[in-house]
Image 1 (cartoon, rainbow, N blue to C red):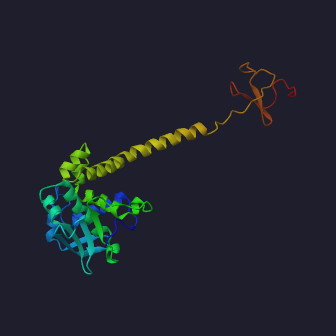
Image 2 (cartoon, rainbow, N blue to C red):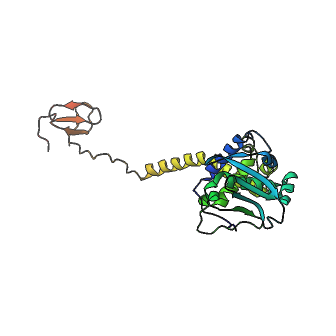
Image 3 (cartoon, rainbow, N blue to C red):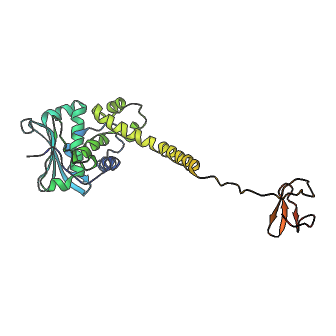
Length: 260
């Protein structure tokens, strides 16, 4: 009996998407605009985070998986992804949920071999998986598979130029929910450099505002006029005297008197 979710090795969403692109390349699908997930029925090996492994993808009777849309297991020698025939039919007809379900289970196959080899069975519940509150997203098998499923079907070169999540959904043939997750993450990544630059600008402005401005030293001028410019701007510099106004330097006080 399988549970709804598992605690797995931590992965950032960006890392999960990169792994999905790696699998696309391994399967020769890197530049494909619209992937046919049923092409997996003839695939005997897939790339995983633990290397290339034997693989089986098959459709089973609906009664075999009455509550699940897909299930990924390890049979001792192969990673096995099974879907009920109702999901296979939906994928054949181009249904976004059915197509995405296959990508979701493929995420478990590629990312979670360690759990599978320990006997875990990783399903996609038809009614939706429940994740315990103590499992953070970046360590959730279900969250990682969810991100992987969308990224596997989406051609980045095309999707990054599409204006809405709806367009991504239509182009990639996945559910609107999956397309929205991908679209929001990509928009956040595209906006990050500009946001970082703005944060640096604000930090610089705050730093300048908080830095105490050096105060100009108070100069005590002598009660005498400069013989060159006639301004009262004389001040002592060591054993000499200088006029601040005209920069004239005197070796001694002009009239020979002592400084008062």
